[in-house]
Amino acid sequence: MTKLMNRNLAAKLISIAFAMILWLYVMSVINPVITNEVLNVPAQLMNESILRQSGLVVFGQPEPTVRVRITGNRDQVQRITRDNIEVRIDLRGYSEGTNSIPIEVNVPAGVEVDWNPKFATIELERIVSKQKEVVVQIEGQPAEGYVLGEPQLRPNLVWVEGPESFVNSVESVVAQMNLNGQQENVSLSLPLKAINSRGEEVMSVTVRTTLVDVFAPIDQLKSVGVDLDLNVEPAEGYRILSIISDPVNITVRGQQAVLAGINRLTTEPYQLEELDESAEVIIPIVFPEGVRSFDHQNVTVRIDVEEVLEETYVVPREEFRTQNLDSNLMINQETLPERLEITLGALESIMENLDPRTIQVIIDADDLEEGVHQVTPRIQLPMNMENSVTILETTPETFEIQLEQRE
Image 1: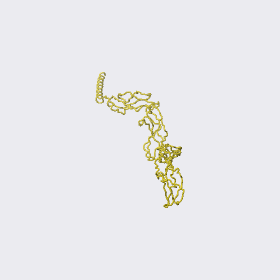
Image 2: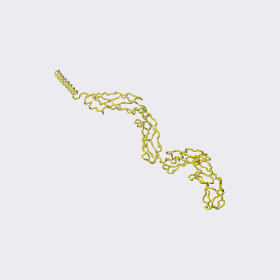
Image 3: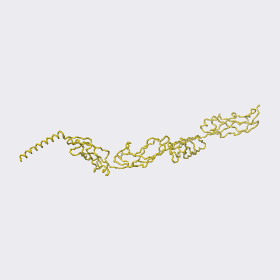
């Protein structure tokens, strides 16, 4: 019996030794132990929702990656792909500021795993909310002859929420509107986006109000005349030369229905009395309700006045002229006054250019017969001065003449 057992034991030992040799061969030659590295495996941030409930959020958009080293038999290692490797960073329980958080790596069983780095630096920020003004960015232009009015927004303030640093970088919340040659008022609901000072969209914040209602009035432009409500009284001895207003036409804006019945506007009432020198005044224009100025709010009025001078000129009887005298008759020169004094009134600039030699005294003898007649002389001035010079007085105003037969 003992011999039999000894014989079996030897066989068993030989079998075991053979199996070990075979296992070593298989492990070293057919299925050896190998190491494989997987680079840049992305880590998944865990429990962000729990973090948000505590009023915190991950700053920025971190994308931590790790290098994973897997060691094991070739057949097991080769079965592990990037998709089998789970890299996690658990955010739960951390506070505001910069945190060094352990990185967890899980792979299928049967292999050894190592990774680098072991920790990820994650910055957590407080979640804040701030009100920001809504701004409409206009693209395009209304149709020719029309202009955009002041857009009306509802709401005009909205709440922006997110990491404090990103919220603080938001300059405004904008809605974009394209006019595309519009001639009528525009009413739209437009999406909103947060914009920083460089005009870039801030992606890491949330605008709580997603849409804004925008009403954009499109005003018509129209050219209208402006009438002066002006009363000017010159001082005694002065005359108004001219009243010139600028502009005489202005462009107004308003809704088409409002402008349809408006062709002229007037200024506010303005009065000047005892004006003894030229003046320039600015008078506001009166705009009806619903009508606004596009280019001018006021009219500039230039009032030129000049002093009226009086000058007396003497015309001797030798220079008197006779008209319509019967050819058989003649005037006895001794019956004529020796001279005629003529007092004229005119502006200084005109009086300076008046040549006394151009003043004529004319006696009209039409239908007069031989004998003595009372006549009123006619004073004739140069044609270019008849309307600007006033005959104030003649001395004598009338006189007698004696008509005699020619010899």
